[in-house]
Length: 458
Image 1 (cartoon, rainbow, N blue to C red):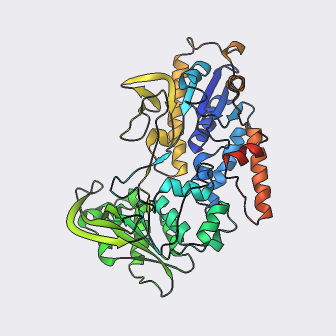
Image 2 (tube, one colour):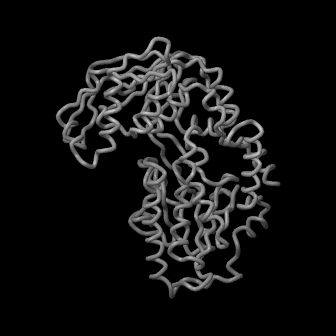
Image 3 (tube, rainbow, N blue to C red):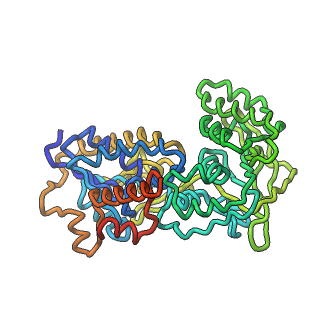
């Protein structure tokens, strides 16, 4: 085992991937490791704070686990620090025995169809960050004056956005939804949302509980076209696989929607399958989505959507694309632009086929922007295992960590950079909770950089 304090690790990204990696490092090395978690935002928790729907507070309980890691004496948070702007990857490599990139997936995948530049077209990540109060999205323009919206995608993010757009805003008033978003949604005229999937209902990526939650909203009916819920032989075989129990449960919920015509006067969520958008229509802003009908071809679990000549146009005033997230390049490192991830082998970042010594990846920047928060934990375990193997293999050649190596926070201070510590984040946290109590909410987040830095005492 390594002697105290022989190991120093920098984790770039204070979201769940980064915190799960920190927790695994503490598990493996205890007091023998110092972990510095760096984030470009002045607040931690990334996806948990800015990606979870406000009406799902239970999902945010994982923060309690992260707080336990952060209380360790050998943990530091360096917020308001951007790698590539305030410090380079090469500088981090000179200061730390290992650098783990956990920068997440910062961009939405583009459907690559005409019309996405029109006002009224939105990407999921923009909408999600807007209603969660991300400081870069406080002034994001969202117009809810139309009566029908179309959501493209067949995953839980699509359901989250549909639920936020269709539910009674009064039901959100006690959550931590951003004040500006609540005010905008209170004026919404949206009464119908169509959720499009390019493949069939058996290939859905919804989870049954989130589907059922949407269906149970007061004043909302979930409906589906019976003919689009009919499974081909290959899909029926897929559903017989014991590993597909979760998808089978979601399919059962979807099929119950075919028996629901929708009650008069209620808002509606309409699930459509085997439809792919061809273009977003409108001269000056979104007026509809022109779609093609698909059929499925291929073996079970490998079916693909094949175009047919049939076409259909859905009139709408808003389109939200929820077809996945992708990472952005990290300055100074190679990047797989096709997949939107850092190229790696078991978490070791690669330059071509060669490992970049001491640089690792975990989370969505490693595996792509998909899966639940809990899925990031085994991913972090794999990466930390690679870190441990490499540290053990290089014990004799690792440079001695002593005072002359330098401390990142001191280096940044010398450069005039304002670094937000974990203690200062807790000051922000406590102030946001107090603000929430005053307005009858769980918390009232600060939604601008100026407010966040001011609350930290900057």
